Length: 288
Image 1: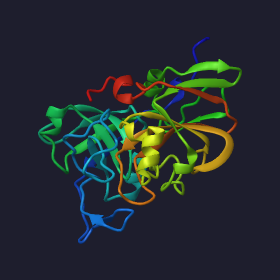
Image 2: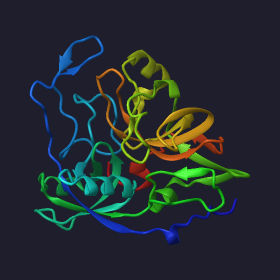
Image 3: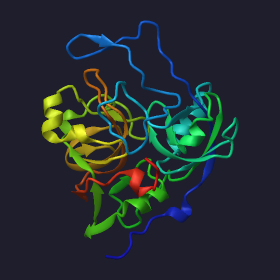
């Protein structure tokens, strides 16, 4: 099969600035288990030292645990949204202030904030408030000969690493680590697929084990049938969406590991096969 052609040469690369966030816990912030008990757990924002892309998504004593470093511009709505809408998975990021200035990292996810993985030794030198610049590239990426297929948050670097191939007239093939049934998709369906993720509902632990979902890793490529992620996330028979696991499990009802949309097609023009090694920590040569 000939190589797939994209419009990469027409894409615009822009710098977008952010700062490293810090964890925020509201007073009395108990997180409820499905049985009504509650807990106080770490998870979102800041610098996470011991959870990285490629690690497990389940089993942490945390809630919505984010790998790597969480960055944002929390004081300006326009810059916040520019960071979210322009960045793509696989973009380069550089620390521009503080003791780790000059260190390069890679965008690995988008949750309520943007997630970047840096070398472990550099993360130990970082502090909340340090400045980070993302070299955004990928917004508007298209397959020249496949107009029915839409990319979301996919950098040219990650597109090449995925090894997507043609699988027939108007069809492409993608390798994924696992398939999720659309019936377990939860919080985030109401959000557009260029901004923030969608959680899967993981409260039924027996079902998670039965389907093998409890083996999911941060950075896994995920396929969902009958999921149309063009504008928001909805059910459409025959549609297929490819997504990325970007944060860890949750004890909250209706929440669980989060998936970020990468590719979507309404007409079933995306074929996929299961490869347990389909994880961006390997594809992008990140150190797990």
